Image (tube, rainbow, N blue to C red; front, side):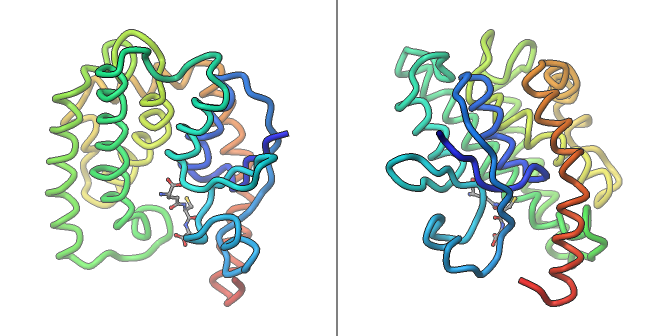
Length: 224
Ligand SMILES: N[C@@H](CCC(=O)N[C@@H](CS)C(=O)NCC(=O)O)C(=O)O
């Protein structure tokens, strides 16, 4: 059986978990936190989680895993059949991953872990987030799902990444940039949170926070 390795406080982990649930593919979860363990690097070349254990070997990188699942388990598709529409879904995912999530992560230390991001970093992140959110607004109106009238892989990314962005920008910049620049997406995050699969992932995220906090505490004491 497929094994999703990572931890449920991670939005990347949860993006893959949501795809597995939506596709109705059986899987188990194995809690793996980032570390310097060579076994982790053997499974995931950048030492990041999540990765998926398959009967052929591991696959790392959340978006690669989503695409693998779509190829290997075509039932309950998460992409449209039309090539152009598929490209549009991937365009939205790329904006979410590269131009929003990776950008806002630069201030996650301040937003979630009591750190302090340098002012020039904050200025740059705020500017880039305006650009990324404007790009997202040009592709999605969020009146139903991220990429139109049906749930797609773009929703796996949007529903798991956007709430953290809203929270982090409120803490670090004193403004919820999602609510301000893309109010329909803010409403969408609440609406999609009621979808049973998303609600389950979010409940399990909350249940996993204690374990994650223990991992962070051990790490700050010098463990790996
Ligand atoms: N591009 C990766 C990003 C995954 C990622 O950054 N995971 C975090 C946990 S949420 C991690 O493993 N961080 C440890 C590290 O970067 O060394 C993906 O999409 O799977």
